[in-house]
Length: 217
Length: 408
Image 1 (tube, each protein chain N blue to C red):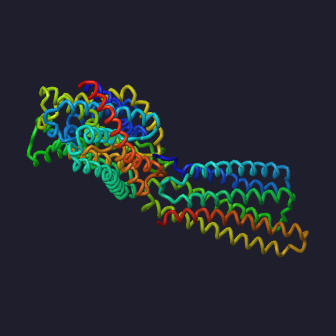
Image 2: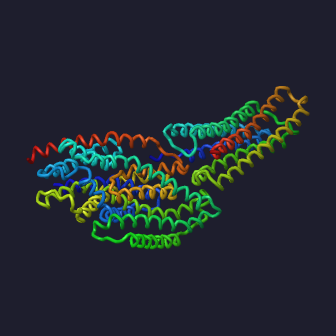
Image 3: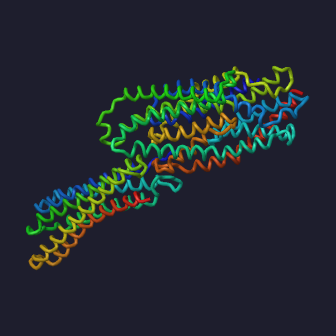
């Protein structure tokens, strides 16, 4: 009568997703240094990780039949995994654009961009930590101290995302000041990539928010 | 012949049901496989001999009104033999087909079947049968409620605290006391009179408390000897706390084996006792005499035999399949079930140990304590209520007339 709990596969999935997100840092470093072969290699690696994460996602969905009785609603679990999946998708997509266009990052925003990428990665890391608390939450039966601890972690994630938002704003301002000196199409794509890096943090925050919903019942 | 059939039934019970009861402890790694077999052997036997008398009495003469037989006692002999054979064969078929049917339901169905058709509708004590059927519905519910309450108390007292390990060390001995006390109490109140000991109520309470305390002390010593590497908590914060509950699991496994022995052994030997009663009194139906102890021992022995020869396979599969159950949950579920079963044994109600355990596990699940449960099992329980009774009845009617034709 005991079915396999979806908690471990869910944690495995976000682990894989975060590995993928982490590669954003070396990827942008390579792009800024105009080392495009290195960037292409990293992009390929990101792509592979995304595919692996996809496999884990399908595996998890298949093993979550309707007849399960769980301490958390089945829909929530599926919702969380969908958002985790989005995280890897975003990273794959934006690195794809950068790699395809061999984008040059203007020196004026290079340093800021690296900081910004770091904060998005931090958001994803925090989301991973929160999901990793899920087995503890099941152990305590979603009650008491552990719940407070997780809520605290979700608050921290919100703060990280807020910081990322602020950085995004700053970069956009800096880019606006120099956009006239850039090729217009390149400028448009730079805005777009910046937006997508910001979305990585957004989606990470959403993973945390969905998990928080499990606590409120 | 009755002895052989009875042994066959007991063997079947040992092979299947006991494995279920011990599976939780092996699965949560509280016991090694060999330890589980030894413990089961000892306490199944003890449960059968010390607390199995009441249920045996019910199976033996509670369902069919033996006094209505008057001058044809051999009918009862045929009927009981037919019931044993019917239940045994139905279990064999069901196990082959992979249906988790209940031994208890099969045998009760079989006895009701031969009683109603072979002897007459009025021979069946429908009131008693109704009570038994009701208890099949209420026992999983009750086990669920107890398990739910137990798990909540663990949450409150141990898990949700600053230092779960310290709290576990503090409270687990009390839980062990609870296990010892309940088992001892029911045994003293209901069981011992079958082995010829009778005491006033207050004295019973006193002895039960004493036994509880002794067992709790043993448990405390065992906890003291545990080691807690802080490393284990790195990966999963509650690993060391669960180790303490592992000790508790051993005691609840014992309780479960005892409870199981006290209730399910009757399925096999109740009919044997009935047949033997007639044979011994040279054809008279003695509705008064107590169940001889050696028959209880026979049942216990049969169960142990089944466990040793075949049960290890089932324990292995059950045990590995439910690794999701950590000791703290395993404890709440098993004790909830064990208490329910022992109380039922004390009242003489034959209930299904497996169903009771399922009810208890769902109780813990309702307290949001288990990762994922497959609710499909509830369907099989309903199926067992609906299908097993008629199947056992029809088979036993068939065998009843076969025996009747063969021997008279």
